[in-house]
Length: 120
Image 1 (cartoon, rainbow, N blue to C red):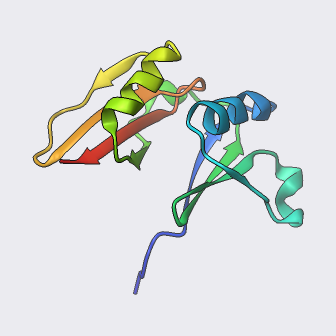
Image 2: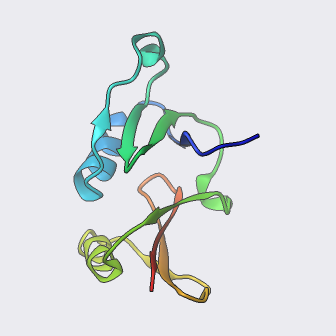
């Protein structure tokens, strides 16, 4: 029986950890958490999102802009997040409406699709 979600993993190009931290920790304000010592040589970094983790791994050889794969961050103030993304000169894509939710999408600096979503 599946009882919950522990973490999700996204990838950025090898060697892009500092730029990744600038975006995910700086722009989005997500706190970095310590990776286990045994995994540090693999590159990347881990983030805390509420009571879940986002593992940012490193990987080369594919085009992240060609996939529908994405992570959706649940937020309390979608207007605030729209302004943050716009103020960082990131192109916003309005999503297909879903009843009882307001949302929008964008691509992170590495091409990963990201969604911000708020229950209304």
